[in-house]
Length: 218
Image 1 (tube, one colour):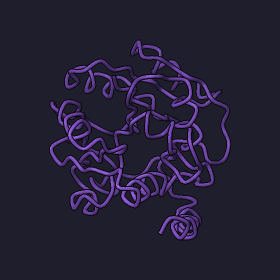
Image 2: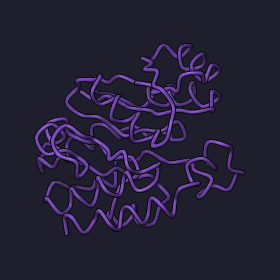
Image 3: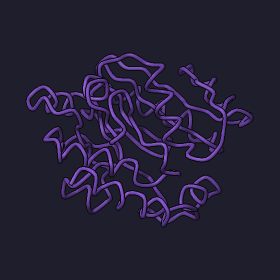
Image 4: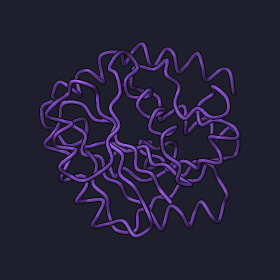
């Protein structure tokens, strides 16, 4: 029912704890799909040891959204979750979000990352649950049917475009009880590793691109 898409880079220590969290707290049918960069040897090895599915992708700019798009194209369950390797799942995250999806028929269900103030207010979701029907028919980004994420972003604002576009289309519903807690250094304080630094490198550029693209649907 849910493909949990997890783009990873340079954090092999996170692979097993993530899968353990998913196994312990997920009730419905699911798959964990690690989206690895070619040449990231330790990461690939750690992901293999979890027994999860692995897709290896060539590196380059826009790595995060491109990985998500490849993961979406190579999976087929009814929903996909935009995951990460620095999140922890709480019991009920899946059934509660799916109940909202069934009730509202919304294409994008916002989950609760437990920290971000904008997420707490239901304004967007860092780790949304997205209907495959919605992506196939309309596209979750403003790139047309079949596209999950806009690959013009380096990393940031991908989730915001998905959330805001869904709201403009009346395809958004927020489920605060579906808790997928984001252990991001911006929230909990540890020093940023190289992967976090890479993600923030083009933050201003990504913001400018989002503001430009937002005008297309508002």
